[in-house]
Amino acid sequence: MVAAMVFSVAGYAVETEAERQARQAELDAACEAARQKKIIVAKAKHVEECMEKKQRPDRAACERFYVGYGERSGTQPPLFYDLPECVKAQEYRTSYRQ
Image (cartoon, rainbow, N blue to C red):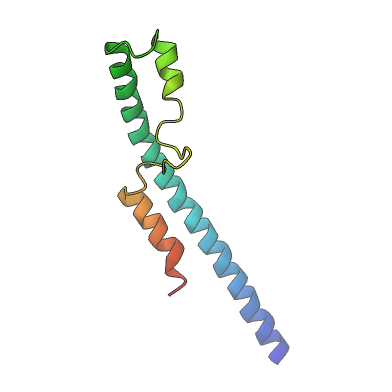
């Protein structure tokens, strides 16, 4: 009977962990979707500014220059992880540690 209880508790822990991972994946996806919306708008603004100021020879060159805008690059941290969706995902990620 004790063995059945141990297996039952272990099974519950695995199920809970699987549920937690699924929820974390949902929150992370919502965060990335919100970030990408902001990045697309900001990137377009920078490309237009690049074109207006003739910082590059043509639109394709401006777009190539800003292709990685918003993502981690060297010591530049990724942008927009301060959005509510990302804060919620991070809080959930660390909530089980408390």
